[in-house]
Length: 353
Image (cartoon, rainbow, N blue to C red; front, side, top):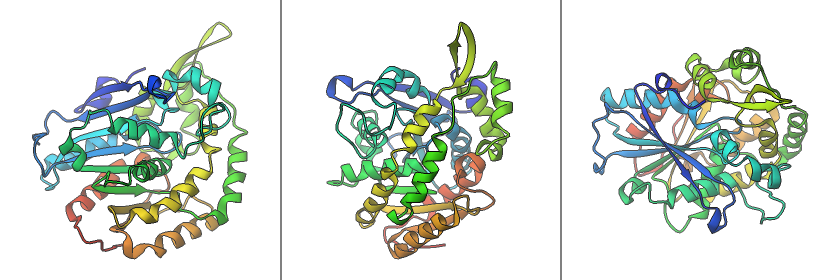
Protein backbone atom coordinates (compact mmCIF):
# COMPACT_ATOMS: atom_id res chain seq x y z
CA UNK A 1 0.00 0.00 0.00
CA UNK A 2 2.19 2.82 -1.25
CA UNK A 3 1.33 6.48 -0.99
CA UNK A 4 -1.43 7.12 -3.50
CA UNK A 5 -1.45 10.21 -5.69
CA UNK A 6 -4.48 11.81 -4.05
CA UNK A 7 -2.83 11.72 -0.63
CA UNK A 8 0.25 13.47 -1.97
CA UNK A 9 -1.40 16.11 -4.15
CA UNK A 10 -0.11 18.65 -4.94
CA UNK A 11 3.23 17.19 -3.85
CA UNK A 12 5.43 14.72 -5.66
CA UNK A 13 7.57 12.16 -3.88
CA UNK A 14 10.71 10.23 -4.84
CA UNK A 15 11.77 7.30 -2.68
CA UNK A 16 15.39 6.19 -2.27
CA UNK A 17 16.47 2.88 -0.76
CA UNK A 18 19.99 3.16 0.61
CA UNK A 19 21.76 -0.16 1.03
CA UNK A 20 25.03 -0.02 2.98
CA UNK A 21 25.07 -3.63 4.13
CA UNK A 22 28.36 -4.35 2.38
CA UNK A 23 29.98 -1.46 4.26
CA UNK A 24 28.91 -2.75 7.66
CA UNK A 25 25.53 -1.14 8.38
CA UNK A 26 23.09 -4.09 8.52
CA UNK A 27 19.89 -2.18 7.79
CA UNK A 28 18.53 -0.66 4.61
CA UNK A 29 17.54 3.00 4.88
CA UNK A 30 14.49 4.58 3.23
CA UNK A 31 14.63 8.30 2.40
CA UNK A 32 11.87 10.27 0.69
CA UNK A 33 12.07 13.61 -1.08
CA UNK A 34 8.91 15.71 -1.15
CA UNK A 35 8.62 18.57 -3.63
CA UNK A 36 5.85 20.84 -4.88
CA UNK A 37 5.76 21.34 -8.68
CA UNK A 38 4.35 24.84 -8.07
CA UNK A 39 7.39 25.79 -6.01
CA UNK A 40 9.47 28.21 -8.09
CA UNK A 41 12.54 28.21 -5.83
CA UNK A 42 15.67 27.37 -7.81
CA UNK A 43 17.79 24.56 -6.44
CA UNK A 44 20.83 26.79 -6.93
CA UNK A 45 19.39 29.64 -4.81
CA UNK A 46 21.82 30.08 -1.87
CA UNK A 47 19.09 31.70 0.25
CA UNK A 48 16.80 28.64 -0.05
CA UNK A 49 16.62 25.93 2.61
CA UNK A 50 16.50 22.17 2.53
CA UNK A 51 14.45 20.62 5.34
CA UNK A 52 15.14 17.19 6.86
CA UNK A 53 12.49 15.47 9.00
CA UNK A 54 12.94 12.72 11.61
CA UNK A 55 9.85 11.09 13.12
CA UNK A 56 9.09 9.89 16.64
CA UNK A 57 8.73 6.29 17.82
CA UNK A 58 5.76 4.57 16.17
CA UNK A 59 5.39 7.32 13.55
CA UNK A 60 6.49 7.22 9.90
CA UNK A 61 7.67 9.65 7.23
CA UNK A 62 4.27 9.63 5.49
CA UNK A 63 2.56 11.12 8.55
CA UNK A 64 4.55 14.33 7.92
CA UNK A 65 2.78 14.81 4.55
CA UNK A 66 0.01 17.19 5.75
CA UNK A 67 2.61 19.37 7.46
CA UNK A 68 4.88 19.32 4.40
CA UNK A 69 1.95 20.45 2.22
CA UNK A 70 1.39 23.39 4.54
CA UNK A 71 5.10 24.29 4.52
CA UNK A 72 5.02 24.57 0.74
CA UNK A 73 1.69 26.43 0.79
CA UNK A 74 3.11 29.03 3.17
CA UNK A 75 6.29 29.17 1.10
CA UNK A 76 4.42 30.00 -2.12
CA UNK A 77 2.14 32.42 -0.23
CA UNK A 78 5.04 34.80 0.21
CA UNK A 79 6.35 34.02 3.67
CA UNK A 80 9.83 35.13 2.68
CA UNK A 81 11.15 31.66 3.49
CA UNK A 82 12.39 29.74 0.47
CA UNK A 83 12.11 25.96 0.62
CA UNK A 84 14.18 24.07 -1.90
CA UNK A 85 13.02 20.58 -0.92
CA UNK A 86 11.84 18.54 2.05
CA UNK A 87 13.37 15.16 2.91
CA UNK A 88 12.30 12.56 5.44
CA UNK A 89 14.24 9.51 6.62
CA UNK A 90 12.44 6.66 8.38
CA UNK A 91 13.87 4.94 11.41
CA UNK A 92 15.19 1.65 9.94
CA UNK A 93 12.68 -0.42 11.93
CA UNK A 94 9.69 1.75 11.05
CA UNK A 95 7.38 1.98 8.04
CA UNK A 96 8.64 0.73 4.69
CA UNK A 97 12.10 0.27 6.16
CA UNK A 98 10.67 -2.14 8.73
CA UNK A 99 9.26 -4.27 5.90
CA UNK A 100 12.53 -4.14 3.94
CA UNK A 101 14.58 -5.05 7.01
CA UNK A 102 12.13 -7.59 8.41
CA UNK A 103 14.47 -10.59 8.44
CA UNK A 104 17.49 -8.86 10.00
CA UNK A 105 15.26 -7.10 12.54
CA UNK A 106 13.83 -10.42 13.70
CA UNK A 107 17.29 -11.98 13.81
CA UNK A 108 19.32 -9.20 15.46
CA UNK A 109 16.97 -6.59 16.92
CA UNK A 110 14.04 -8.60 18.22
CA UNK A 111 14.55 -7.64 21.87
CA UNK A 112 16.00 -4.13 21.73
CA UNK A 113 16.55 -1.78 18.80
CA UNK A 114 20.02 -0.21 19.07
CA UNK A 115 21.46 -3.33 20.69
CA UNK A 116 21.90 -6.06 18.08
CA UNK A 117 23.06 -9.34 19.52
CA UNK A 118 26.17 -9.64 17.36
CA UNK A 119 27.09 -6.00 16.69
CA UNK A 120 28.53 -3.14 18.76
CA UNK A 121 26.11 -1.12 20.86
CA UNK A 122 25.39 2.25 19.20
CA UNK A 123 23.68 5.33 20.53
CA UNK A 124 20.91 5.32 18.01
CA UNK A 125 20.61 3.34 14.78
CA UNK A 126 18.26 6.02 13.50
CA UNK A 127 21.02 8.60 13.90
CA UNK A 128 23.38 6.33 11.98
CA UNK A 129 20.78 5.98 9.22
CA UNK A 130 20.54 9.77 8.90
CA UNK A 131 24.34 10.03 8.81
CA UNK A 132 24.41 7.46 5.99
CA UNK A 133 21.76 9.41 4.09
CA UNK A 134 23.83 12.59 4.37
CA UNK A 135 26.90 10.75 3.06
CA UNK A 136 25.25 9.51 -0.15
CA UNK A 137 25.55 12.64 -2.27
CA UNK A 138 21.77 12.96 -2.64
CA UNK A 139 22.24 16.42 -1.13
CA UNK A 140 24.79 18.63 -2.88
CA UNK A 141 27.15 20.91 -0.90
CA UNK A 142 24.78 23.89 -1.16
CA UNK A 143 21.86 21.83 0.17
CA UNK A 144 23.97 20.56 3.05
CA UNK A 145 25.06 24.08 3.95
CA UNK A 146 21.43 25.21 4.23
CA UNK A 147 20.07 22.11 5.97
CA UNK A 148 17.32 22.65 8.55
CA UNK A 149 16.65 19.54 10.64
CA UNK A 150 13.27 19.06 12.35
CA UNK A 151 12.80 16.12 14.70
CA UNK A 152 9.82 14.99 16.73
CA UNK A 153 10.17 13.12 20.04
CA UNK A 154 12.52 10.16 19.47
CA UNK A 155 13.49 11.69 16.12
CA UNK A 156 15.11 14.56 18.03
CA UNK A 157 17.40 12.04 19.74
CA UNK A 158 18.38 10.68 16.33
CA UNK A 159 19.25 14.14 15.01
CA UNK A 160 21.21 14.98 18.16
CA UNK A 161 23.13 11.70 17.85
CA UNK A 162 23.81 12.43 14.19
CA UNK A 163 25.02 15.98 14.91
CA UNK A 164 27.23 14.74 17.76
CA UNK A 165 28.79 12.03 15.60
CA UNK A 166 29.68 14.73 13.07
CA UNK A 167 30.74 17.38 15.58
CA UNK A 168 33.90 18.26 13.62
CA UNK A 169 31.67 20.47 11.46
CA UNK A 170 28.25 22.12 11.70
CA UNK A 171 25.95 19.48 10.27
CA UNK A 172 22.72 21.50 10.47
CA UNK A 173 22.22 25.21 9.86
CA UNK A 174 19.28 25.04 12.24
CA UNK A 175 18.00 22.26 14.51
CA UNK A 176 14.35 22.21 15.63
CA UNK A 177 13.34 19.86 18.44
CA UNK A 178 9.59 19.21 18.62
CA UNK A 179 8.55 17.78 21.99
CA UNK A 180 12.06 16.44 22.71
CA UNK A 181 12.63 13.97 25.58
CA UNK A 182 15.09 16.41 27.18
CA UNK A 183 15.38 14.71 30.56
CA UNK A 184 17.84 13.84 33.29
CA UNK A 185 18.24 10.35 34.69
CA UNK A 186 16.13 11.03 37.78
CA UNK A 187 13.04 10.01 35.76
CA UNK A 188 14.59 6.92 34.21
CA UNK A 189 12.76 4.51 36.58
CA UNK A 190 9.45 6.02 35.44
CA UNK A 191 10.49 5.55 31.81
CA UNK A 192 11.37 1.93 32.50
CA UNK A 193 7.97 1.38 34.11
CA UNK A 194 6.32 2.77 30.98
CA UNK A 195 8.46 0.49 28.84
CA UNK A 196 7.30 -2.51 30.86
CA UNK A 197 3.68 -1.47 30.22
CA UNK A 198 4.30 -0.95 26.50
CA UNK A 199 6.02 -4.34 26.38
CA UNK A 200 2.74 -6.04 27.24
CA UNK A 201 1.13 -4.93 24.01
CA UNK A 202 0.42 -7.67 21.50
CA UNK A 203 0.58 -7.53 17.73
CA UNK A 204 -2.78 -7.39 16.01
CA UNK A 205 -4.05 -8.09 12.53
CA UNK A 206 -7.32 -7.07 10.97
CA UNK A 207 -9.52 -8.20 8.13
CA UNK A 208 -9.30 -4.88 6.29
CA UNK A 209 -7.85 -1.38 6.52
CA UNK A 210 -11.29 -0.06 7.46
CA UNK A 211 -11.47 -2.51 10.36
CA UNK A 212 -7.95 -1.57 11.45
CA UNK A 213 -8.68 2.17 11.32
CA UNK A 214 -11.94 1.80 13.26
CA UNK A 215 -9.96 0.07 15.99
CA UNK A 216 -7.01 2.50 16.05
CA UNK A 217 -8.80 5.87 15.86
CA UNK A 218 -10.57 5.16 19.14
CA UNK A 219 -7.25 4.70 20.93
CA UNK A 220 -4.28 6.84 21.94
CA UNK A 221 -2.43 8.43 20.32
CA UNK A 222 -4.41 8.13 17.09
CA UNK A 223 -7.75 9.39 18.36
CA UNK A 224 -6.48 12.98 18.53
CA UNK A 225 -4.78 12.95 15.11
CA UNK A 226 -5.81 15.53 12.50
CA UNK A 227 -8.25 14.16 9.86
CA UNK A 228 -5.65 14.72 7.10
CA UNK A 229 -3.11 12.65 9.02
CA UNK A 230 -5.72 9.93 9.62
CA UNK A 231 -6.35 9.75 5.85
CA UNK A 232 -2.63 9.43 5.14
CA UNK A 233 -2.37 6.79 7.84
CA UNK A 234 -5.19 4.74 6.27
CA UNK A 235 -3.44 4.84 2.90
CA UNK A 236 0.14 4.17 3.98
CA UNK A 237 0.39 2.61 7.44
CA UNK A 238 -0.50 -1.01 6.67
CA UNK A 239 0.70 -4.10 4.86
CA UNK A 240 -0.83 -7.44 3.89
CA UNK A 241 0.33 -10.49 5.84
CA UNK A 242 -0.45 -14.19 5.73
CA UNK A 243 -1.89 -15.60 8.94
CA UNK A 244 -2.72 -19.30 8.90
CA UNK A 245 -3.31 -19.20 5.15
CA UNK A 246 -5.48 -16.08 5.30
CA UNK A 247 -4.63 -12.60 4.05
CA UNK A 248 -4.79 -10.12 6.91
CA UNK A 249 -3.83 -6.47 7.43
CA UNK A 250 -1.05 -5.48 9.85
CA UNK A 251 0.91 -2.34 10.71
CA UNK A 252 4.06 -1.87 8.62
CA UNK A 253 5.84 -0.90 11.82
CA UNK A 254 5.39 -4.03 13.88
CA UNK A 255 4.42 -3.78 17.54
CA UNK A 256 7.52 -5.83 18.37
CA UNK A 257 9.81 -3.23 16.77
CA UNK A 258 8.05 -0.31 18.45
CA UNK A 259 8.59 -2.10 21.76
CA UNK A 260 12.24 -2.85 20.89
CA UNK A 261 12.81 0.85 20.23
CA UNK A 262 11.15 1.89 23.48
CA UNK A 263 13.36 -0.53 25.40
CA UNK A 264 16.43 1.45 24.33
CA UNK A 265 15.57 3.99 27.05
CA UNK A 266 19.17 5.16 27.43
CA UNK A 267 18.90 6.82 24.03
CA UNK A 268 16.70 9.61 25.39
CA UNK A 269 19.01 10.29 28.31
CA UNK A 270 22.19 10.04 26.26
CA UNK A 271 20.75 12.47 23.72
CA UNK A 272 19.75 14.87 26.50
CA UNK A 273 23.34 14.88 27.73
CA UNK A 274 24.58 15.56 24.20
CA UNK A 275 22.42 18.64 23.59
CA UNK A 276 24.47 21.08 25.66
CA UNK A 277 27.73 20.79 23.64
CA UNK A 278 25.73 21.43 20.45
CA UNK A 279 24.14 24.69 21.62
CA UNK A 280 27.18 26.93 20.90
CA UNK A 281 27.64 25.30 17.48
CA UNK A 282 24.21 25.65 15.88
CA UNK A 283 20.85 27.34 16.18
CA UNK A 284 18.63 25.11 18.33
CA UNK A 285 14.90 25.81 18.66
CA UNK A 286 12.48 23.91 20.90
CA UNK A 287 8.76 23.55 20.12
CA UNK A 288 6.22 22.20 22.61
CA UNK A 289 2.55 21.37 22.54
CA UNK A 290 0.44 23.28 25.04
CA UNK A 291 -1.15 20.13 26.50
CA UNK A 292 1.11 18.16 28.86
CA UNK A 293 0.70 14.48 27.91
CA UNK A 294 3.68 13.29 29.93
CA UNK A 295 3.32 12.38 33.63
CA UNK A 296 3.69 15.47 35.82
CA UNK A 297 7.11 14.51 37.31
CA UNK A 298 8.50 13.91 33.80
CA UNK A 299 7.11 17.20 32.51
CA UNK A 300 8.59 19.07 35.47
CA UNK A 301 12.06 17.64 34.78
CA UNK A 302 11.67 18.47 31.08
CA UNK A 303 10.78 22.08 31.90
CA UNK A 304 13.69 22.30 34.33
CA UNK A 305 16.18 21.04 31.72
CA UNK A 306 14.92 23.46 29.08
CA UNK A 307 14.84 26.45 31.44
CA UNK A 308 18.41 25.75 32.53
CA UNK A 309 19.52 26.32 28.93
CA UNK A 310 17.06 29.03 27.91
CA UNK A 311 19.77 31.63 27.31
CA UNK A 312 21.58 29.28 24.91
CA UNK A 313 18.51 28.31 22.90
CA UNK A 314 17.58 30.25 19.78
CA UNK A 315 13.88 30.08 20.71
CA UNK A 316 11.25 28.24 22.71
CA UNK A 317 7.73 28.20 21.28
CA UNK A 318 4.39 26.51 21.86
CA UNK A 319 1.74 25.16 19.49
CA UNK A 320 -1.66 25.58 21.11
CA UNK A 321 -4.35 22.92 21.61
CA UNK A 322 -2.08 19.94 21.11
CA UNK A 323 -0.01 17.54 23.16
CA UNK A 324 3.05 15.41 22.52
CA UNK A 325 2.09 14.43 18.96
CA UNK A 326 2.25 17.94 17.53
CA UNK A 327 3.03 16.90 13.89
CA UNK A 328 0.08 14.52 13.81
CA UNK A 329 -2.45 16.62 15.76
CA UNK A 330 -1.68 20.11 14.43
CA UNK A 331 0.28 19.77 11.16
CA UNK A 332 -0.74 23.18 9.77
CA UNK A 333 0.04 24.98 13.01
CA UNK A 334 3.40 23.27 13.32
CA UNK A 335 4.25 24.28 9.75
CA UNK A 336 3.36 27.87 10.62
CA UNK A 337 5.58 27.69 13.72
CA UNK A 338 8.49 26.38 11.65
CA UNK A 339 8.05 29.12 9.03
CA UNK A 340 7.86 31.74 11.79
CA UNK A 341 11.10 30.47 13.30
CA UNK A 342 12.85 30.53 9.93
CA UNK A 343 11.57 34.05 9.23
CA UNK A 344 13.06 35.34 12.46
CA UNK A 345 16.15 33.15 12.78
CA UNK A 346 19.20 35.29 13.40
CA UNK A 347 22.88 34.53 14.07
CA UNK A 348 22.90 35.60 17.73
CA UNK A 349 20.89 33.31 20.04
CA UNK A 350 18.04 34.98 21.89
CA UNK A 351 15.57 32.70 23.60
CA UNK A 352 11.94 33.64 23.13
CA UNK A 353 8.74 32.21 24.55
